[in-house]
Length: 239
Ligand code: GRF
Image (cartoon, rainbow, N blue to C red; front, side):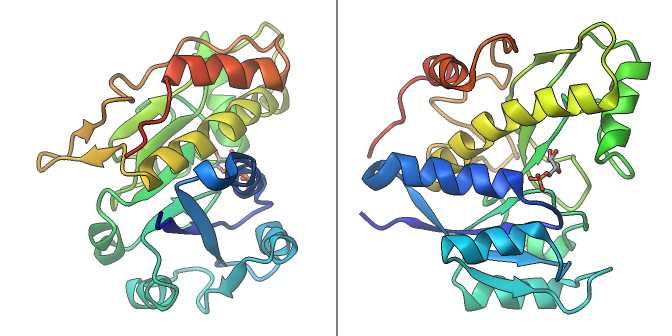
């Protein structure tokens, strides 16, 4: 089987990158893609160290504050990237690249979009906004990327309870646990061609028929959560 060539763009520590690498490794021969490139706008990004440890090729973008379309397109083309996964990438994707990778570029956002997303909504700000709004649920949204921050069609969302007394750190940690389980599964599914965008920009998938999953129970351990999540998503469609 030919596997999809995945490129990950990251600006920070890269815990989601690590979750993707670990999940694909755990799937073994059943995985539908391989991470073959990690690119970052920051030379000191922890994600690049993780790439080195995993033996994955790495690239540092030359213009850290505003990597332009040509530069990004060039890096992705040189590595023949078919699917791009943003994992804490803090720069806007230029329109030309978003169009080139239409239906082939994913992001994970740490709140239930369309709420609490958009320009300036990243990191602790997201979680503070969720808590101040008194929202009972937060949780990761995995979505296709377009040229607007946090705007493209949502594929999957896993609601996570906001608990009494939560500060942004406690909530961020709970949501991150859910991200680490959900995002790699969606990346593998898209790599396997299970999720597509139709001409109207709607998500088409036999498996991801409605984006909202049952609410995560944070009292459960990760192994049990993964089993519950896999049951909710249903078996991967092998072609
Ligand atoms: C995550 O919270 C993700 O939702 C957001 O950026 C953060 C990245 O964290 N897009 P990491 O670098 O993967 O640890």
